[in-house]
Amino acid sequence: MTEIITRFAPSPTGFLHIGGARTALFNWLYARHHGGRFRLRIEDTDRERSTTEAIGAILDGLAWLGLDWDGEVVYQSTRATHHAEAAQSLLARDKAYRCYCTPEELAEMRERRMAEGLKTRYDRRWRDRDPSEAPPGVRPVIRFKAPLEGETIINDLVQGEVRVDNSEFDDIVLLRSDGTPTYTLAVVVDDHEMGVTTVIRGVDHLTNAFQHTFIFEALGWNVPAFAHVPLIHGPDGARLSKRHGALGVGAYREQGYLPEAMRNYLLRLGWSHGDDEIISTEQALEWFGIDAVGRSPARFDFDKLDSLNGHYLRQADDQRLAGLVAERYAAAHGQQPDECALARLVNGMQGLKQRAKTISELAENAYFYLDERPLALAPEAAKLVAGEGAARLARLAPAVAAVESWDEETLERAARAFAAHEGVKLGDVAQPLRAALTGSRTSPGIFEVMVVLGRAETLARIGDVKR
Image 1 (cartoon, rainbow, N blue to C red):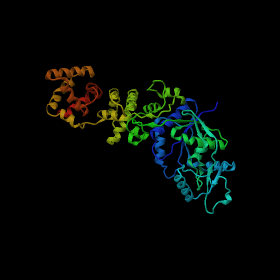
Image 2: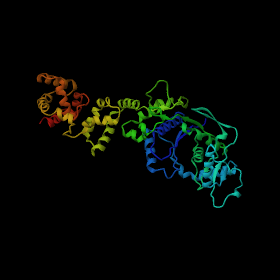
Image 3: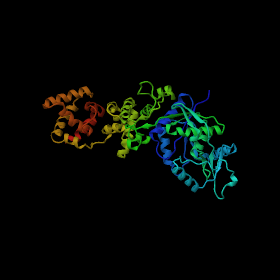
Image 4: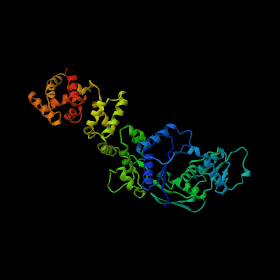
């Protein structure tokens, strides 16, 4: 049985966008499901627009998503010799020809065809001419001889049977006049030499598949199976763009999404397994198949992503989450939290992660466990510990210090007894207490917070504001 080999082949002209990440995920899952290989090729032949920063962002994004590739990364720019050899082979097989049109001739040709209401394609004037007729000083391009009659059929694994009349195709350029390959030629040569058996990519590449098929067949190479997946649209049904908030994968990481949540969410953008919404990576590897990819565009829904991320946050290891929060704390405060603070954060994580949907939210709610004394109080919290609030905390401190068993139930009983003695509601005690211990008006349950902080830290933070 033929080994399945897929590839992800981004152009490094920008960040790894969400559509590219989903394409990579589908290729990775399909290869891993079949026990095959997943290859990575950087299509950096556009030297003016390709950047090392973009390459780094693509590699980092894939690594963060956990999409490991097999073998070395292939850089298309290093393979120009292979591309040129293929073009020469096509010339030798009479499947390609040299075109000596000048830029001025091509411009005149486009203008004339536009005036005639025709498609602005090359008129094939050099297809059957003898190169001896070439004008002096013109470096030719090499063009492919597209079939002139009949039709071409692609049995796409997602789109089904797609037929196009061959009269629709142009004699595309394979090698430019400076000898550099075009995208169409380079992709075919690289896919063949990398042993790619299945090309999974966006449906916007479907028209390219026909030209690729012509070149594969002209070179006597096996044509890979094609699977063109639907595009991702925004909530309004238009193609996903920056105006919808579409970002690079790195930005989603910065905003606090977990890689396992992103994998699950991207998987469900165009692929389904019954009514299942929460699908672990292990399940995805077991279940994934191209036959379950739909033809309709998927709609990106940030609310669903937030909800899904919240689920994975609640399932995540507390130590791991504490580490992620600590990273953000260090970046924001310019210093690493000490070991005692980290231990508090880990102990408090169960309560914190129930209330957050992203790591960003989690961090904002968790920093009070890491902050050094005295806490910087938010304005609303400062009001609660001013005047009578501070006086009440001063009277509360001895009652808290006298608690024998430092657990939530005992602490709550002590606070209720103190409130009854003061003739006030429990909230009149809990609110200034929360402000003193967390610097905020909101937090996990205040008695849970006291247990996590411990007796000494709790009394010290009360002492900072009761003066």
